[in-house]
Image (cartoon, rainbow, N blue to C red; front, side):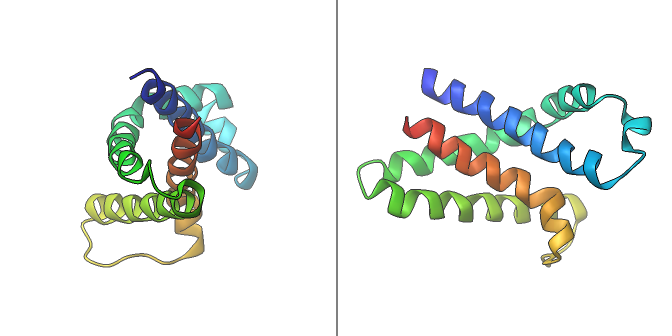
Length: 127
């Protein structure tokens, strides 16, 4: 339980930071609308806690299934695919579409934080 909690907190912080930093870099007046970066990181930590928890529970299930097998050969690619799949399922559910968006900008906005969090969960959990 302790390893899961540490992995969950690391994923939540990574998700919040990876969501916010590109916005502050790309959009010049982003700080005027959202305030300081630490405030938006706290906000995304609060609002992102449930989706990250669901992703961590799915990740924990997958981790326990591959624990005895080739950890790094299968683990990292599996968690990359898991993060991308979870992102597309959330994207389709929130946008009420039956198709996937394969635009790079859409992936960088939504898919990258989830994929980084997924791989980080695996690496922290492995420790």
